[in-house]
Length: 73
Image (cartoon, rainbow, N blue to C red; front, side):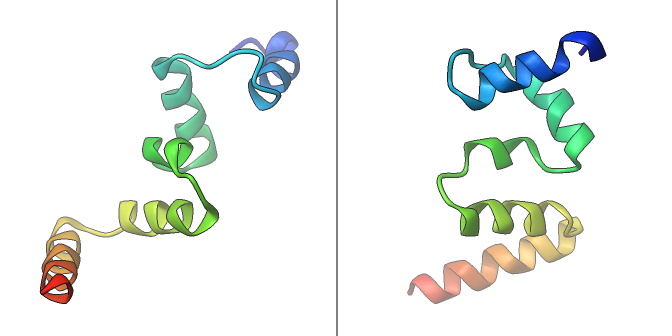
């Protein structure tokens, strides 16, 4: 994103005048160090979970899935 237009573009996104495309969202996620799905969370708790889960290694993600599935029973 060109620095000269970044502020204006972000303002349009924040106000809902424009919706960023998926490539722009990927770039924003990388810059903000958040997972892509962060932008689709409907509340702060879900966003926090998305960030925490994205930082887990594969083994811990599988363990967490097992724990959640066990809790559903």
